[in-house]
Image (cartoon, rainbow, N blue to C red):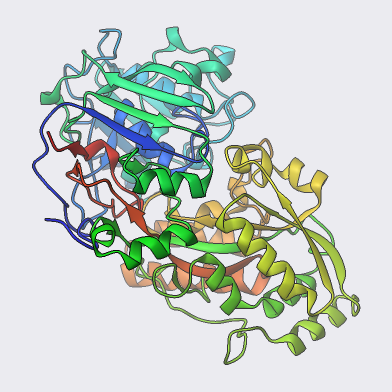
Length: 542
């Protein structure tokens, strides 16, 4: 099966054979190869080739479900939802030949709590597990919330019921880490692999070469076919050059999945042969502008609302790639791929979508800033920069003078926009960003962006606005504890309404991304949980 969108909801070119090298490219390096420190979606998909996790996202191209991976089955729930128990498969081994034990998984989870040493990855477990004041394993202590009754059993103790716990167990930070090989902050240079591939060579910012892990046993792995002999990634290629080299056949796929840029997009869409190798999925990502409450004058809600009304949404959508191929206009936060989506519009921008300048000026007056103010927009190269400059032009119409600050892509979330200290030191009042659910539920989508308990002061923060609202926290907890789907949807809509009232996330587009695959790629599909190609499933025509 081939053709336009053949890899959306189905598998394009099935039937690949083992062997060959899958050549991939990215404009920047991974955020980390340490499974506790990675948060980029495409880095997670690379991690999926190197590491097993307790649960894993399945390989159904139409259903973003989780399935057992290291575990024999889903978590067994007891104690009113406060205890989750998993039993490990027998015979799973690290690349060193040592068998993976429950203690190796428990140690991996304990590393998440060492945020002073290992910042950057998801931190749901810090608030969710009943750990007391545990700070990680480097002081010699074990976490009381993670028990190992025997070598193959794991038991997690929660503070409150949490219906999505199996989804958390599919995140990279449950990949086993043998304590004797842990080098702390340096572990990402040479992590010990339990998946079908191990690291042969890693030159940060330049290349990553993965080769087969001879200790991986296909019979113990229900997820990964591991068809190629090698997976090679070239880092640091300029986005327009990347597209040109991809179309020329030098690479099989853009592993970063940032999407084809404007110039190459027009070439692909105009050529029937190239178009037949392209996919344009709705990714579930939200493209948005974050407004930083810690940077004056955005500590005043009226200054924030002035931005919302002044934004030229039509121009911002065009900068993202236009309606259709680039996505669809977003006026609310929760994407159409989730049940609680409403499409409400708290800040209408006129019939032509170019902004309500009168309403913006009224908000500036309420903020005591009738003549506007100066601010800085943080961004990164490519489409993000186009969006930032478009936003600056639209804000200038009401006297908001915004300077664009272009930051490094590889560290954008670790030490740039995602570091509260950097936000303050550079005065980043606004930031161009996007977000897709860590896993496809309302909690997985919204909580990292708006739950004050997930603010990370040391970097890798995704609650950019540093919103810490008691009402938002309470509604989130009520939604996660509820069993009735309709009531949970109602509560998540209240979360969204409350956040929009606070004016900290300006939605631009519910994303569509144009991906391109080499004609030799087999078994390709866009993973419905991530919106990118699931590279671990890919093979090559032989």
